[in-house]
Image (cartoon, rainbow, N blue to C red; front, top):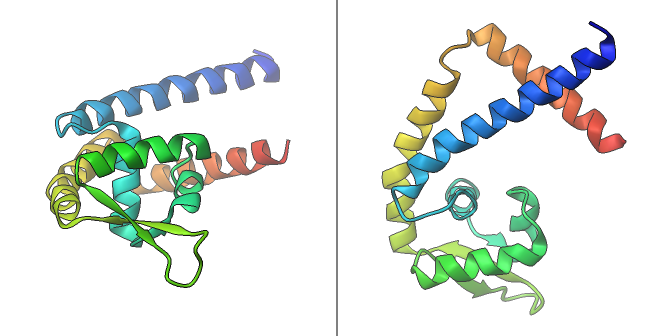
Length: 144
C-alpha cells in the first residue's frame, strides 16, 4: 500500500471514528432536549464561566453567524442569559442561568461517563499517543 493510500485510509478512519463518536454523544445529549452545539456552549460556560458572545463560536468551533442563533435558542429555554459588559458596550457576555447551571451539573457526569466508555478501549499510553498524533496532524492542517 502506497503512502498516499495509507493517508487516505487514515483520513477515512478518522472521519468515520469522529462520526461514530459524535453520534454516540449526540444520542446522550438529545435526551435533554439539547443538540451538540447547545451542549457545547453550555459546557464551555460551565467550565470557563461567562464568555463574550464573539469568543464562544471560536471556542466551540461554530461559525460566528450561527452563535447568535444558538444563544437565542438557549435563552428561550432559560438556560443562558446575555449580560452587557459594563466597560465596553460592544461586548455582550453569555452566562448560564441558575436553571442552565442546574441542568449542566445534572447531565455532565453522564456525558463524562459516555466519553470515558468510548475511549475505554485504549490504554493510557494509547490515549496519550492518539492525542499527540491528532494534535500534530491538526496543527499541520491549520498551516496548509
